[in-house]
Every structure is written in C-alpha cells, then in structure tokens.
Amino acid sequence: MANDKFTAIVVGAGPAGSTAALVLARAGHEVLLIEKGAVPGAKNMFGGRLYSHALNRIIPEFWERAPVERPVVRETLTLLHDGRSVSLNVRNLDWVSPPHHSFTLHRAEFDAWLASEAEEAGAMLACSIRVDDLLMENGRVIGIRAGEDEMFADVVIAADGVNSLLAQRAGLAGMASPRQVATGVKQIIELPSDVIRRRFQLEGNNGAAQLFVGDCTGGMQGGGFVYTNRESVSLGLVINANELRKTQRSLFELIEDFKMNPHIAPLLEGGDVGEYSAHLIPEAGLAMMPRVFGQGILVAGDAAGFALNLGYVVRGMDFAIASGEAAAKTVIQAKKHNDFSRRGLSFYQKYLRENFVLRDLAAYRRAPEFMENCRLFETYPDLITSLMAEVFTVSGSQPVHLFTKILSRVRQSRVSLAKLFIDGWRGATWL
Amino acid sequence: MALKRLSIEQLLGLNKFVVDDEEAHILLDKECCRSCITRPCTAACPAGCYKAEKGEVNFDYAGCLECGTCRVVCPLSDRAIVWRYPRGGFGIQFRYG
Ligand SMILES: Cc1cc2nc3c(=O)[nH]c(=O)nc-3n(C[C@H](O)[C@H](O)[C@H](O)COP(=O)(O)OP(=O)(O)OC[C@H]3O[C@@H](n4cnc5c(N)ncnc54)[C@H](O)[C@@H]3O)c2cc1C
Ligand code: SF4
Ligand code: SF4
Image (cartoon, rainbow over all chains, first blue to last red):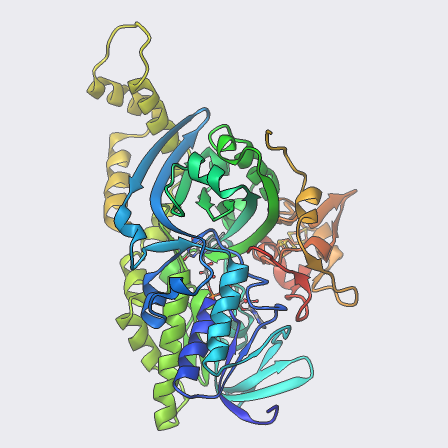
C-alpha cells in the first residue's frame, strides 16, 4: 500500500485522531492513522475524566464496550489553605444513569480501544512510527515523512497533540508561550475498590471527582485533582508554565507535598504508587488557537488548542473527539468536490461552530484571563477557609455576628471591596 | 500503613521506559545554558532531567516523560534545546496514562 494515496493521513491516535479516522473509515474512505507510541495510548495521560456527550453521539452507549472506570456521581471543589479546607460537594444520581454524564478512565486502555474501533471500521493503524515532517508541493501539504518513508494523501489531519510539530511545520501555529500552557503531573495510587468506595462514600461502582484550589500549588496559578478509578486513585497537580518559570520548587516535590497533605493523605493511606506521568495542557483557549486549516491540512484536538480549564471543570477530551469528527466531516465534504485547498477545507470552521467546540471556547474566552488572577490561588482560599473555620469555632469568647465576621476577615485579607466585587462579578460572568 | 514520600528516582523507577540507546531525542547546547541565569528547566522539568551542577547544566534524557515543559520554559529555547519526541516505539510507555 506504500505507494498508494490515502484520502487522509491522520497523525496521532489520541481521541482526536482516532475519532477522525473512525468517522472517515465508516464513510468508506482510505485512511491511515499513524501513532508514535508502540500502541495507541502509550504516550498519553490526563487527569481524569471524559465528559460523555461527544463520544456518545458517535458511538452510542460507548460505555457498554469501552474500558471506562467509574461514572462520576460526586463532584467536589475544595479550597485549601494551611490546615484548613472548605469543600463544596455536589452529588447527582442522574449523572450515573444513561447517558452517563462522565467517566473516569485510563488513557492507555481507552485510547487503544478507540483506535481499535477505527481499525474495525476499516482504518489502517500504524504504530511505533514518529512522523518527522510534512511533504509539501507548491505550498500545499501532500503527505508526511517518517524516517525514510514518505506517504501521500489528499489531506493530512494533524491530531498530534499539544506540542504539535505538524501545525508548526505547516506554518499554522507558532511555539506556545509559557502563559498559554500548563504542566500536569499525576500519580496513580493503587487501592482496593472497597477501600475507595468507603473513603469516598460511593455506592457500587460510582466514582468521585475532586478539584483543589489553594496552597497545593504553592500559591501558583493552577490546582490539584483527585479522581477515583476502579482500583486506583488518580492524584495530580496542574500548574501554569509561566509560574513554573519563576519557581524554585520542583513539580515532583510539589506533588509529593500534595500527596502528604493532611487533607489528602487519609484518602490514599495504604496505597501504592503505580505510575508517575506528566503532560502539557493548552490553557489559553481561543487566544492560542492556530489557523486550524490550510492547504491540504486540518488541525484537531490539543494541536489546535481546543481545551478549557475553568477551575471547576477541565475539558479537552470532548473537544478532541468533536473536532476529530468535524475534521472527518470536512474531508468527506471536500472529497465530493475533490477540493482540498484552503477554501475546500473551510467547512471545518462551520462544523466546529455547529458542534459546540468553537461555540464553547468563545463563550469562555475570558476564562484564561480570569485564571491569571493570583488572588484566586492564595488570598481567597485563605480568606474563605479562615472565615468558615471561624464560623464553626466555639471558644467561649464574645459572640460576633456573621456579617461582622465577614467584614473583619475581608479587611484582614487586605483585598479592597471593589476588587472583591470585580473578581466576583468576573467569576460569575466569565466562567 | 502511612504513605511514604518518594524521591524522583523512585517515582521514575515505577514507570516503564524503552530507552533508545542510539538516539537522544532532546539535545542541549551547554554553551547556551552557561549564559542562562535563571535556569527554569531545573525546577520545571517534572522528571528532574536537568540538573545544575558546578556551574553547568547536565541533562539526562533517560527519565523524560515527554511533556515538553522544558522547551516552553527555556528562555533560549531556539538555540539551547533541540526538542523532539523519541523515535517511534521508544521512550515512556504509560500502563495507566
Ligand atoms: C493533567 C491533565 C489533566 C487533564 N484532565 C482532563 C480531564 O479530566 N478531562 C478532559 O476532558 N480532558 C482533560 N485533559 C485534556 C485532554 O487530555 C486532552 O485535551 C486530550 O488528550 C487531547 O486529545 P488529542 O487527541 O488532541 O491529543 P493527545 O491525546 O495528546 O494525542 C496525540 C497523539 O499523537 C501522537 N503523536 C504526537 N506527535 C506525533 C508524531 N510526530 N508522530 C506520530 N504520532 C504522534 C501522540 O503519541 C498521541 O498519541 C487533561 C490534560 C492533562 C495534561
Ligand atoms: S532554561 Fe534553557 S538555556 Fe537555561 S539552563 Fe535550561 S535548557 Fe539551558
Ligand atoms: S520533555 Fe518534560 S520530562 Fe522531558 S526533559 Fe523536558 S520537561 Fe523534562
């Protein structure tokens, strides 16, 4: 097949690439899916959890077949400061009946499964191949080069993730700046399922997701996370790279601190660390979006910067899946007119707008700016945890009414009421 | 049993790596590092691959988790670091991910 021309070469068998290959193969197109890992998923990590909606439209009731871990029934947002924490707990049983709202999962298993779905639909999967460059002719992409091998296609779909070489080679994207990405680190802590069930107060195979804001990042822009899998807990930190540029604390020390934090340690006690991983996350939303299509090329998933971190919700998988689908639909459309020029591929933008990717990124376009506010990671967790701790403290001293307590705490935090109001207003309207 | 603090060596020891002995996927120009004052790579690399020792920065690609943080935080990245993923099939192999 080496000399034949494919309709599409998809680079990267993550959720974006495998979905694109699946949708193209279903429509009967010749598609080659290339992955540098020995198997799909071997190179990929994430927090956490997949919001089901996007994949459920492409593979209805995928959870019946996919290697998912636990449907999430409980969401917790926790502010941490010193010895104090304040949590908001939300439990919704609707989330764990079909169509399940979200699932925790392991990427090594899940990505391998999704790629195998594409293969079963007729896509050709080639692993252990690192794509080194694009092949260009008269300013348009005509294929890829991997080592000595050259392969040709009407269109190349760059689904090669956050450090996208291909989007850069095509001149569509530049290098990300430190402010635009965050580094995530994670440890898998292996624990028996009944221990997880008891500690997280879960019934059956239901799961929990918990996000942390405060001194777990040493006051840096970012947060911590805990997700329950069947027989392990995923524990990690995400910190903006611009902050990492200035810190002296290494990330692997911070995650150890987080693990030993008295608010977290009891959840993990007796567990064994099974794996340590790291990965970048695009964080700047629309501001870092490259041009997502060019002559003979489309960019999908993290390679296009399609991810969102709102502090209480982290999304990237659903964007990757939906943008992979949109890329495939674009190619199917372009093939009808045999026009793979920039113009022929411009449908991509329309599909991305229709299916929620660009709509949601536009709706939250100011969220990255909001997240750069340093008060979120130190001052407010301190203020809120000390206020709430005071509210629940009985010490025999002179009673103070709630309103006075709040005012005096705000005064102590040295945030002006105007700033507090502005931050509150922005949080309510930008997130 | 209480959890124990693990060193970066212990953490990396839990991972599965297929090290490519023939090709280093990240190359460092140590001359550039000498003129680099802040050396953010030394704290930011989650695998501790960059170590400042006796005025030099030493780099070992063997425990690299392939995240790309070093390239992003390096102020001289165009000159100091040639960054690629390992050749196909080599490098980190997540069993969980
Ligand atoms: C710490 C962390 C926590 C996260 N938590 C969540 C979460 O809870 N929920 C959520 O929805 N999202 C989360 N995300 C985001 C989510 O993981 C990504 O948005 C998603 O993986 C993007 O999918 P993708 O297919 O675009 O890219 P990837 O999953 O990165 O896949 C890219 C693929 O391309 C391959 N590749 C790259 N270059 C080449 C090349 N040159 N040749 C061959 N193959 C190549 C890679 O090996 C990889 O398999 C998180 C991310 C991180 C880092
Ligand atoms: S940040 Fe870049 S230039 Fe500075 S020491 Fe590290 S690799 Fe060298
Ligand atoms: S890619 Fe990540 S793990 Fe590898 S050396 Fe750079 S910062 Fe360290």
